[in-house]
Image (tube, rainbow, N blue to C red; front, side, top):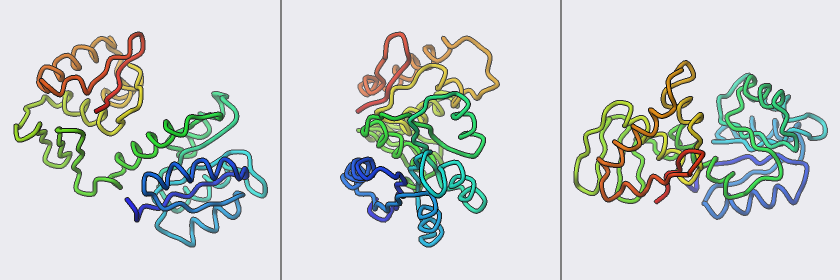
Length: 224
């Protein structure tokens, strides 16, 4: 991961340092910007930034405008940080092409989990389409799953569910998130279908079934 660059944009030095320290521990290369204008200049000068962590309220150019400028030329993932938790702000962010929206104050560990998950989804961390977790190896291209040296036969939705879990390791996922991402937004069925598929998936994973943790009253978390 050493070659993956993450641009951290925030006018608060302490926030940049906090995020940078956690990113460096995970072997990302970190670039910093203290305002929106500097962020845009760095982004286009570097040309190979894998992900942007972007504050909303900044001098010279706010986060929304930075996002607009980046989206004119790039689909690089963007995580938006904001002191607000207003629904309209979230909707605006997603309309502009923001990948994740995290309100301050935030947990650095959760932020890092989001960074990893986004880079997995964009295949920055698995260029060959292979995701591994513990003894499970999943090949998104070949559509195969192995546990140790044993091949596991999964249905299409079981496979997609496992992909989503493995791409979001360590993140608590509610049933609505899982439905929206695995069954898509146009699914209007009973959320209990998730529990049914999780039960079948656990049965096929056998000893690795406990990687899928139940969060009572909420959903699930995949954790080795």
